[in-house]
Amino acid sequence: MNPAVTAVVTAFRPDARLTEVVRSAGSQCARVVVVDNTPAGEPGVDALPAVADVAQVLRPGTNLGLAGALNLGVHEASPEHDLLLLDQDSAVPAGLVERLTARLDADPRIGVVGPVPWDADADRPLDPRATHRAPLADLPVVITSGMVVRRAALDAVGPFREDFFVDCVDQDLCLRVRGAGWRVVQDATVRLPHSLGDTRWRGVGPFRLRSTSHATWRLYWTARNGTVLAREHWRREPVWVATSATLQAYVALTVLLFEPPRLRRLATLARGARDGWSGRSDPAMRPGGAR
Image 1: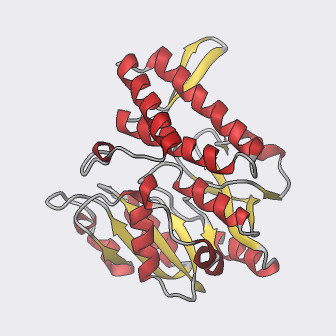
Image 2: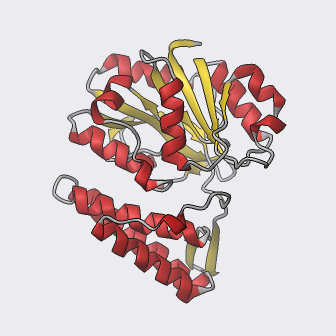
């Protein structure tokens, strides 16, 4: 057990996998805090009694979004602890916390360190670029689940950005941490089994694209928040912004080809990009009970 780390786990309508996530985190961290965004009146963490045996459970009764849940969990964590952030379906492999916190101990300039998200079924990294990186690679961003954040870095840059609600919350944090002079790194020797959700390869023969099939409201936040980050960081992180814009175009293409109702979903993407450019957001795209 690492006595200087609190795990913050975010949940939404969780299933039995959350129990293993909490148990695995509890065996490696001093504390585990679970923030359950499941709306009041629906079964959430309370339907998984073993979770409460290991973790402190916070249930606000509404969907705060990913950023709001993370901020609530961090507020409950010990102020001197670094933070392990986890999704509800990402169990922690043995030794992950010890190995990632060793990176923080070895270099006080590191503010965020993450593992390689791993597709356990295909036995390969979710991002194929990871196979070509150094054992410890400086990156513009790493994903939330499995990320270890130095508490001093988080205190320096401020809380997670609640106007983002869900998508790009991790990217925003990492870019702000880098902008404040800290390193964001990925340890290629540490793997975290992780799922991208309901994704499917579509097409014919070699002409196939991976379609995410996200709910339409999620497309709004992907476009809106990605545009905000591009507008704010294009001078400091031009390569990352160009890569992000390319991925947004890829998403739009998969929607056009494979994801009806195509016109409505493309219009939602366009509205998200427009609001991101102007700095607005649409409250109607914050579903209380949608996933």
